Image (cartoon, rainbow, N blue to C red; front, side):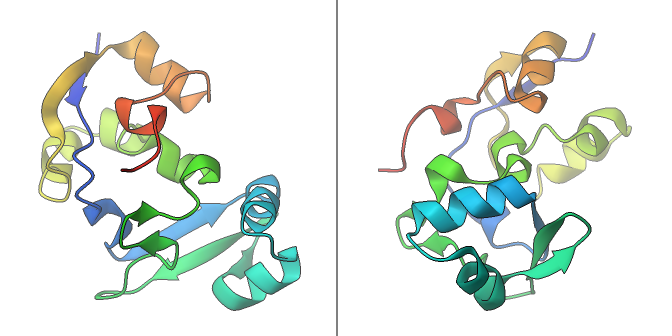
Length: 137
């Protein structure tokens, strides 16, 4: 059994680290709708096509374009990659990866314990971390 402690501290470091943010086609549509933008305008401004969806390249020193001063501006419709962090399979399954990720995420090792069932529910879109339960303040 795997159990992990995590509590989002809203430090926003996960939103400012280099990498890619993946959006499925439905997730991009939801984000565009939420922002009241045509999908083409949203994708042309921020995203690159990737397979059946889009990606945002987040470069060193530049946060995700959806990170505002008060948090994620698309929080309620953010993509599953963001909703499931830090419970990504590669961070759960790879030995030492969870501890290494704590260098980026100060909430790892803090707060409630998530067991295998809770983690599976989060990854399946059927459960939430505390961070996902409410809008940023």
